[in-house]
Image (cartoon, rainbow, N blue to C red; front, side, top):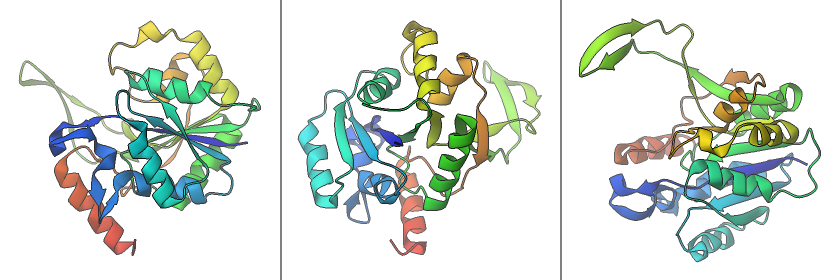
Length: 232
């Protein structure tokens, strides 16, 4: 059994929206609908767990699931941080085997391709932990007090994306070994960080440029251009 957890969080202050940014429309549909679709269509994924943002009405998300006919998707209430939200989703999984793959994906990444999803699933199933990464194309500077203190060599620097995949037993071990107080506020930025701290090696697969995370209003236009090219 393979499970995907969609972490729906992050308010839309930059979008002048009181609700989460994954509800913002892309080409007339909620961003979240595009995010859920590849997981819903992937036959190797048995269940999708959508973790609703803390304090938001679940009815909004139920309507999206009904309109999109996402029968594989189940709602779980989120917490006040990414750590607690994803963990809530993880702990709601039932009857998992140790080497079943659990995928964690950001709800604000609506352009995941089926090719990247399949590639990530395959590597995670073999290695036990895998993340998609992109090379850093720009020169990297370390800045302190508004001044450059160092130019950082970029040959070993990569940008992590989601979905990230882990054996069920690897993620459970990480939650058991790494205490929640290790992370304050939003200092846990992805689950690979949690697994790294537990001592388990994390493999990488090539990410995709189009697999952007929507963080700024202008990112919506970029996403719509990709959707237009893809005929969606």
